[in-house]
Image 1: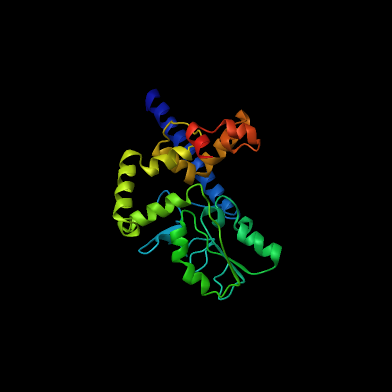
Image 2 (image 1 turned 90 degrees about the horizontal axis):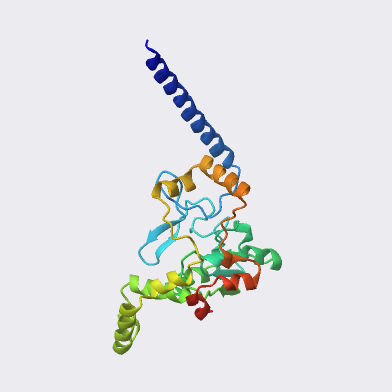
Length: 259
């Protein structure tokens, strides 16, 4: 065996051991992560995780009953109830996106009032969709139904939902419908909402592979956490600063006008 062949063989062996070590470490981290609560998991690849949402013919989408934090109705509760003193309707704020299920305000309200509260909030739901599940909510015979409205995008979500159902023309007079079409052609509402909720993120595109890694690789996530710790980078948009004046300075002109 020539020297170059020995070097090549050694390189292949070392490379195989290195890749194998990373794979084993990845598996170990995945096993350890089973004991850590998962918050608001999303599906990037079909084999990666269970999606929070499934398609629905009437509501466009609904909660997936097979998602780990959902009950058999697909809402974020430990169990589906037959009776509840309070039922909460709303969007992601009610659902409790990015916090543990026990930190969502309906669950906090239940603890504070000692009254059984059922969370029927769903991220991305508009007031129209909440109205669509109101009959289901009332089947729990609640003393109180609380609907949480978020003026940031709930009206837009209602508009989009009615568009999705092809009911926009039916919901207004012919004159109003033509005015809406003209406004949409001149300045699409969706673009305004995107600009409104732009929090100053970088315009650099994140590659699909890197996004897949960020959602599925524990090793990648650990390395990025270490990197952010060393560099002091929290990647938190300035608009989310706890200092009100500092956050206000981060608003873009469209946001300033809106607020």
